[in-house]
Each structure stands twice: as structure tokens, then as C-alpha cells.
Length: 464
Ligand SMILES: [Zn+2]
Image (cartoon, rainbow, N blue to C red; front, side, top):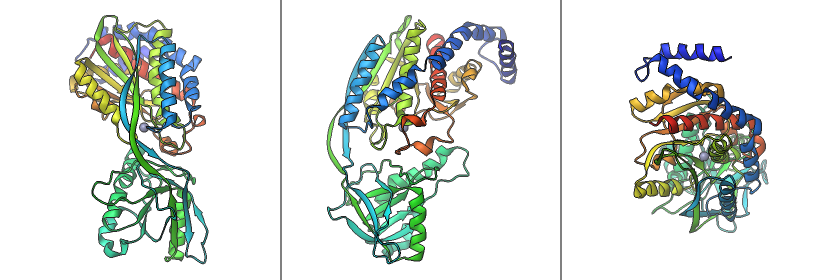
């Protein structure tokens, strides 16, 4: 296996124009880290500590920003980082919006001989206002996209708009398909309100064919009068579409009790191991700690947080003393405001610390595939040469690409990296009641942890 590894390494070298090292120094690099990378991978897979931490975290239920649950989980994370013996652990105060779903969430077909009383599986979209106590009852207009609204003109007025935009199954990269539907979700309610609609119902942004609705954030209404919005499960979206063909006059009675309350105090959770040689140089690794209120957010993004926390834990248990400071940040409020990322960005600027690199994990806990690197070509070229040291974790590629929402706020950081696991199943779970601990494979989670740990180790020891 070892010989194969060396042969493969040389193969990779000959395929690249290697301007950073001579071949012998590349081999030195491989030899230098071979033992540590193997120890990291073995310890992650054998001990499954991260999976145990994620299971504990999921015990708190959801962690929607501003919720009481989220504060309990934040305190757990702070205590856990202290228990693991990180050098410094602290909470960074952040004010966050507080949106409360409430306990009324119903959509029922009325005014239809054939379908009267049929209940539809829905979930209010984040930031949506509630309906009046007696609900909204209105006729339904189906569109494939809110782009159609303009041409429909007066027909939109007074209607519930059913945006039946399908997840494009032909894309290999599911994030492309998600982006298209998420755009409808974010801007849809505003567009519908602009043309006089009274509510919006959106086909869930998922490729999993079940009846579980997938929520997500919507744009704020500024001057326009807000309207309520909800996501509908795929089975009921198809049912509604067919029902409308048979009975175009059917109506929906929508009852939602969600509301936006005043902002409340919350926190980013931060833990670090001080660098042994260059403590003033900081590498941030993290994910977002908040999640939607429909599950414990096991993949999105409990996993990303736990993976990055376990990187520090792995360094401690393997007695790795990083040359540069490695700091784990659990950013709060990525889902509906990015306040945590913005606050950390402000802190990074004010503190004057040298943030040499940042890694974000926010794409689920699936088998590692690659890393996207957002940096100049020289730094990218250097990181690309580390690929052979990552391959045993499943990493196949390192490409230029976007990193992550939260670390994008660290302006001075010139090397931002996004961890990319396999993306075929992520949107089966994302923002839905499906995203529970049993959706996470311990092996896949730990392979991701090992990949991020090795990348962090190389950034810390080699610098960038
Ligand atoms: Zn996320």
C-alpha cells in the first residue's frame, strides 16, 4: 500500500508543472507527514469521538438562532471545548433575530367538491409572518417560477401563488439545482406580494421524493406589506398540481402562527490551540451552529461544527502541537442573517490578528471528495501539491472555488477553503425533519474530520 502511495505521488507530480518544490523535496514532504496523517485518519475512524459529540449535540433538539434550545447547545459546546482542554475557549456575543414558528401550521383544501378537507404537508418558511387567526382562504394560482407573475398580471391579485419549481435532476452538482430553487424561495414572497398575491406556497427544494417539507429563509420585506409563505412536501406538491387541473376553483385555507420577535443575545463559540512557533498567525476552522427548527440539523451544520472541533481534539489526543494557532469557530445565525460570521469578521479586523487561512465545513457529513480554494494562484498551487497526503481520506481533487458564507466575512484572510463532501444526498435532509442523527454515517463523518484535520495540519506546519 505504501509503495503504491509513493508511486501514485510521483505520478501526480509528473502530471503537474511543479514549480514549488523539486521532486525530492516533495517526497520529503510526503515522508514528513505520512505518519501523522495516518494517525489522524486511524484515530478519527477508530474512536468515532466526533460522532459521539454530534449525538450529544443532537440530544438538544433544534438550534434555531435566538431560541432557548440554541443557548443550551451553545453552553454545551463551550463546556465541551473546555473539557477537551483547548488553550482558550470563549463566547463571542452577537445579537440575532428571533423568529418563532408557533404551533399552528395548516393548509387545507376547501371550496372543492372532490378535494374538500384534504390537508397538505407544509412548513412555514423562515422569516414568514403568520396569518390572521382565522387563516387566509384564497384561490390558488400555480406557476413554475415567479418569473411568470408579471405576464399573469391581474390574475395574481388576491391569490395564493403555488410556485411548483422542480429541483433540476439533470445537474451532477446538486448545489446548482438547489441554488435555482433557493432563489425562488428567498425572493418569491416579495415577488408574489409585489403583484398582489396574499400568500406563497413553494415546492420544497429537494430531490428526495417524500412528503416532508423543507424550510429555509426568505428575503425581508421593507416597504412592501409582508405576506405569509410556506414550503410543501413533494408528494403533496404533485397532488395539488393535479387537483388544480381537475378543479381550478379549489381554494386553500392557510393557518400559520409564526412571527418575528425582537432580536436577542446569542453567541459564537470559539476554542483554540495556540501556535507553538507562530502564535500570532491564525487558522480558523468552523461551521455554523444554528439550524432550522424542524430537526437537530445533524448534517446542516451540526456535522461541520463537530468535525472542526474534533480537529483540535485530534491534535490534543495525538499530541500534535501546531506551529500556528488553530481556532475553531461555531458561527451562529448563518441560516437567517449571518450575524455570527459578520461579528467574527468585525472582530478579526479590529483585533489585527493575522488570519492566514480559514476552512469551512457546511455541506453535510458525506464521503470527502475535494476542497475548494479561494486564494491567489501561488497559494492555490502550494495547497494543490498536498493532494497526495489527503487521498487516503477520500479527497480526489483540490480546485479553485467558493469557500463558505461565514468565513467569507474575514476580509483580511487571503486563503479561504471550503470542504466538499459528496453532494448527491445532502438535499434529501437539508432544512427538513429528515436531518436527524440517524442520517449521518459515523465513517463518512470521521473521514471528513480527518480530511479537514490533515489540511489544517499542513496549513499550520507549512504556512501559506
Ligand atoms: Zn448550512
